[in-house]
Image 1: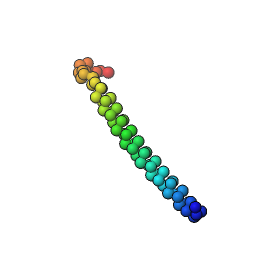
Image 2 (image 1 turned 135 degrees about the horizontal axis):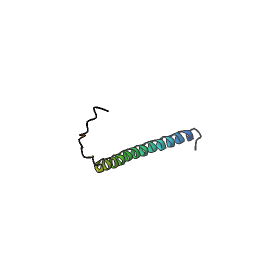
Image 3 (image 1 turned 60 degrees about the vertical axis):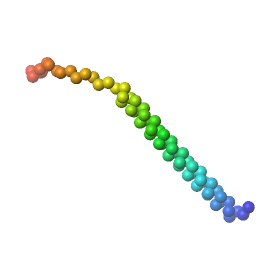
Length: 62
């Protein structure tokens, strides 16, 4: 093998590896975002609001 072609093959391997890593990182980010939205929707759906209570005590003198 010619020594001048080794760096090109090595560079190509690094570029392919970096592209694969970037794609996997993107897929991970999308999956994480989807999962957190699902959890957030579930939490929001389970929250119950407190019943409205009128304050009948007048505190004008306080």
